[in-house]
Image (tube, rainbow, N blue to C red; front, side, top):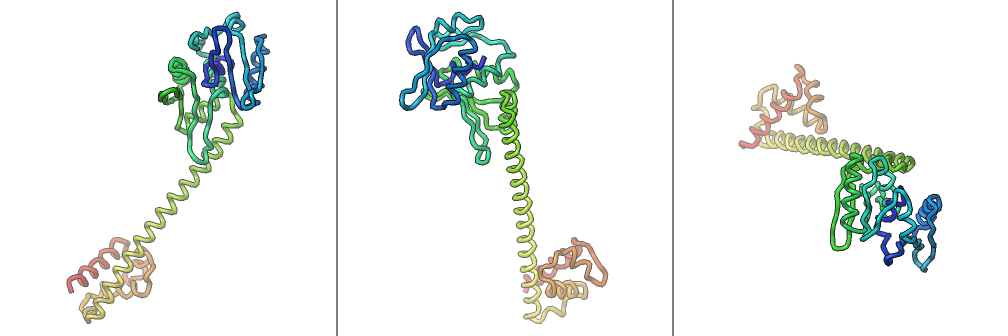
Amino acid sequence: MNWYGYLISKNANVVNSNNIRFATESDYNINRFSKLLKNLNIDHNIEFDGKSFVITIKKKNLEELKDSIKIENKNIEVIEKNENKITIRGAFLGAGSINNPENNYHLEINLSNNINLIYIEKMLKSLDINCKKLEQENKYSIYLKDAEEISKLLALLGANNSVLKFEDIRVQKGMRGKVNRIVNCQTANLNKTLNASVEQIEAIRKLKSKNKFNLLDENLKEIANLRLENPDMPLVELGKLLKKPVGKSGVNYRLKKIIEIANEL
């Protein structure tokens, strides 16, 4: 049923009451479509108009097939569910595209009219593929932007090698994103620690410059001197250097107390 898909794609059109025309710039697509038609014993002509390869088929030849399509305004009869993915494959090969997943996730199939748009949408939903549709002027498109849905559709269409490449890039992007988030988080935490350390040191120096440092109790003086000696050290490590070690919260409390006292001067 691949040929169904080709003939409902945007690249196919009814030339007149007798002929149907499918055009593409891809020699792969034209050869594939021609092979499908030959396997079905459907007579057709292939031409090259200088830009595109064109296949012309007589409508009566299609209508003679048992599972034929009836193309009047290119409307298609309902196909059995188990043939849906084959039809979608043809539509995708006929006028579909997929973005480089390194940039963004986007798979699109362009259809010839609103009827075929709804038709393909129903097919995709019957295969549990979540898709969106776009109707704008003369453009009728089905598109997917979710990476999992794109991967699932490619697998259903039998594009196994493409699935492997797609998933490989997807995993790499995910890992890069995770690493970036971790680095950003660590950088933010480091900046926060450095900013806090600068504020603490400025407060201690202010107390010393105003000769108020010796008025602090022994616990505050001890942590203040340790901070001056270890400006980049985390609070947890500072707490371990005290004569009577305390945890992070204890160190934080003492340093905040020093800042409060300095701010009152």
